Length: 121
Image (cartoon, rainbow, N blue to C red; front, side, top):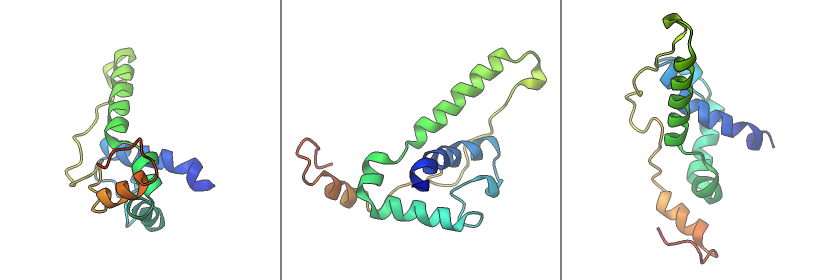
């Protein structure tokens, strides 16, 4: 039950924290070095559980845009320049916010099976 409650936060943090604190692995829930067990959980869910990979998993592009909007709003309301926040560049690591799932098509086919309203791709 803990994964149901906490994983959406970790998904969002895995996208947003590297934008705020680039190169600080300990702040990235997807860091295999800092959080090996959580990293293994993400890997297993994304590659082996069709319902998670195809319907439940958050969208990194959305989490990125949410952070950008909040920072923009914060900066509009900042009383001084010192209070403003600047986001760093997107991390250069390939697939930093949207993992390329090598089993994506296979998982989708399994997920769509028995759901005639879903397409094959």
